[in-house]
Image 1 (cartoon, one colour):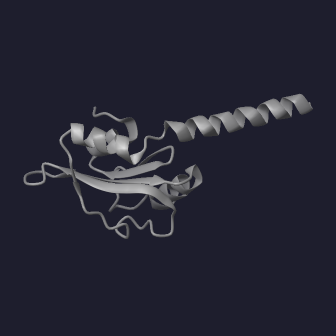
Image 2: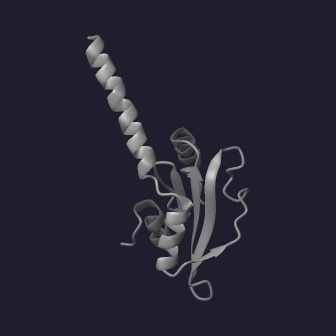
Image 3: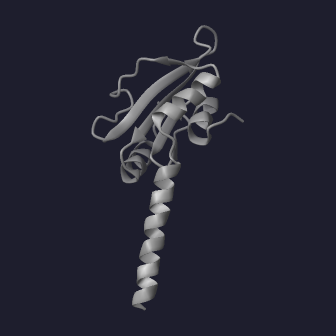
Length: 123
């Protein structure tokens, strides 16, 4: 029984580490957005209501700013728990459309842009 508990604990730790490693960092995401024609814009973290959370990175990007703008706000949290808590607490807010979480990353905005943040590609 002790061996089973030890193996199970190791599997849980490995799973958490893999999930954390799969979350892209801000630099990789910025490159993905640049590749899709997005420009970066100033971003006030209070707009995302994330002042009380520990973030490792955050940014906002826009595409087609002069015609039909597609914007996205990307938050990369320091821990998986912080990202999960933020997503749960803000899931029903109308001013955060298409809010999605992938690992430590939370993004909201235009669906195409959120897809880039969460999946690294467009549909």
